[in-house]
Image 1 (cartoon, rainbow, N blue to C red):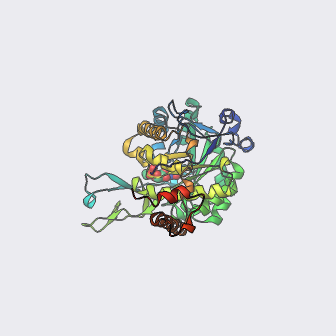
Image 2: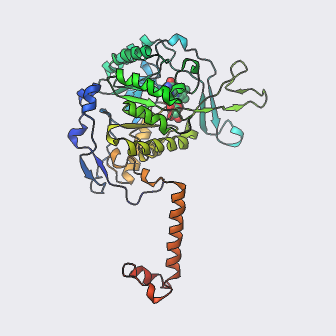
Length: 430
Ligand SMILES: Cc1cc2nc3c(=O)[nH]c(=O)nc-3n(C[C@H](O)[C@H](O)[C@H](O)COP(=O)(O)O)c2cc1C
């Protein structure tokens, strides 16, 4: 990532606006107390950066010690692992997706397959891609809810977000939201994006890929929920800004992107069967890990652009997900507009302790650029994305200027007042 010579001036909240208010926990009051970043204008300068940068973020009224969030999946499947995440210092935890009837969720094994870099996917190559055909949580809802409650009692100041998914049935969604909220979780992430399994029940990506269906379900969810709602988007759609816009218009407070990318990990060239192979057969699954990061970055960038131009930036949040294993990759998501960064496969590969490395690498990046807070650079790279046509115009203009300088003045009539010194220099030989 090239350094920005002059980072755009960015406003950030004043101290009182950053105070975490318990009132914000209730959605009706949340809407009246939206956190505003319009406090005072500040430019990152070398005088400010004498101390460690502040990694804390406040999103939709939720204060987190850092922007690193456990993404929904195996790292948030039960009390023990979620407790571990809090103990290791994660900014927030999003639990594995739950639904009303866990007994309808039947998983298979093997359900993961990995892609390694290097010659012919050599067993020694670095893992860059991960495919799963895992469904949402197969643990009984009552048990998951009991564990959410216990975690909130033991870690009242830490942010726990429930991930939910249901069938195309208003009562079912309402019941699930009601029961999840009673545990005291801080927010809800709605899984509109699970790429495999249960499309016949109109669940997950089956909703996220159909804006009409999505709008209806989002309206049910937002009418019922009293805590912030994030809509998790599928990348398996032509224009991801369309469902994101529908979710925000319906009243969701945040967008999370991306879930996994539909994939076939490979074909075994001996058996000619697809991987991961279950009793000789397979089904397309969800692709994650390092290889998806550039795709995720493009999706998050386009959502951020849409949110900036069509919605009041300070009222909504954006969570970047996909292939994060370093502080630099997290910084990239923030530079294109994300407030928080989720990690799922990275934790499965490196363990919960990776959060310490992520925080220290993000701090190093901030120190290098004299950024004192996440808001100092959030979205700073966004203005530098443009259309290809604009790139052509910019390049033609740059070439024209370079040529003009190289050629010097053709005639004494070409001297100008403003460019006089440059025009003189263009005709000096050394
Ligand atoms: C094994 C596995 C299980 C997952 N289960 C869920 C899930 O239950 N709900 C959900 O919203 N996303 C789920 N995801 C998607 C992740 O939360 C994340 O969006 C995706 O993997 C990309 O991020 P990553 O590269 O950091 O893993 C799962 C991912 C993996 C690898």
